[in-house]
Length: 534
Image 1 (tube, rainbow, N blue to C red):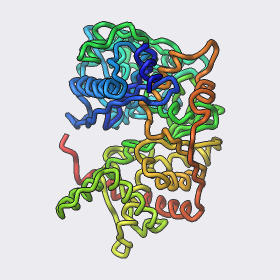
Image 2: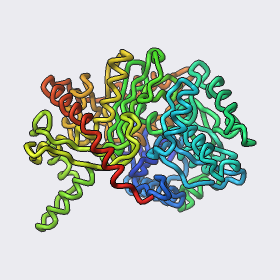
Image 3: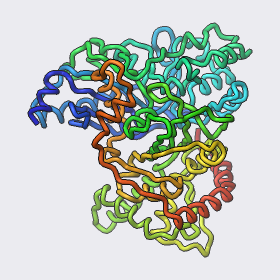
């Protein structure tokens, strides 16, 4: 305790802050790179004028609240008022669209990764580049706004993502880490710069040529892991810490996306390693040995924080519908005067899923809150579908919910492993769905037909990963790579549990997914019959 106190007093601790889809979390790490204090703020997106968004007021209220809680925890545990830090790093949910004018005004409300409104532009750009551009990528949002002739487009002076905006506000630097930058516009992985051929193709598009701005001039600069990406300004210090205790001049790591921080938090940055993040959304990421043989609309190509190419299959929705059902069970218990803690409720229901039939007894759950590009679904409606002779039990219901949470990701991974023959030596799981030990891990191992490991630190997730990237910037030795730093200094003694595939579970999941895909027409019909009030 005394060592930690002195480490913080000396201003050496590293702070990572991540804006997730449902929470903003700050993680402070000590000399051994383990968390010593955290702060958390819960928030939620809104559907406004057809776009999923968060307001700027919510961004700043949330980050100030989670920083305040983290600082209060430090003062309570160690008797220290934070004034200096070794470094700070900001991460956030991937990509999206935040265009600013020359005066720094946001031109339209933040459009998050969840929006599939840029599907037309994504398809056109993917064909033009012969490279998959998912609808959530920033360049897809930009080109869709161009095609729609939105009034704000001619005023764009700077385009960034959520973490890029927060980093800019705190440091004055318009930069992104290489990983998040690779989801704004494709990279040339030889140089880790925006791809020149694709950039030229974009700039020569007739609809784009109508505007005075040039894309290379409005995109953020690119920084690699370990580089300093600015320092905290006086204005930034007041903006982050409303108490006024935090001093300016603190170095900042390059801001990264949650995909990249998830890689770091699971030590999945080397070739042939991979991770599965299961929370509000779900995605599998594998670090590649070679480029894929073809472009696949189901697979996104990204960079690790050190610039290695990685393939990702992403499902837009994972736990949202599951969370909604758990809340219903909580309300049901309350009707009888029974109060059940959320952790116990989730654990009990997850364990119940293990008792279900391997194919869920004929139940099909669709957890789609929005479109799912991997399966070609333009819009989503949560559904529970069953035949009259299905075995409708709590165990089968919960198992169907957990299968649904991974369905889209698992379908997309067939292309990666069976068509492209990508090899992976280890998969690590992290995120909220792994908190109940041995349940989602077991299902995913059987679904992916590969061992899935969960580290003891898996619950810390992306915010801890951003703190580790910050610590790497602060503490790395000359010539020390990120991969070596993580392998030798952070995870050398890490404890983990490993679950191998179960053949019977694999067969059951395959049967479930076959029926799930066959009945997708029900999802499409529901979307058409029940339009959202946009």
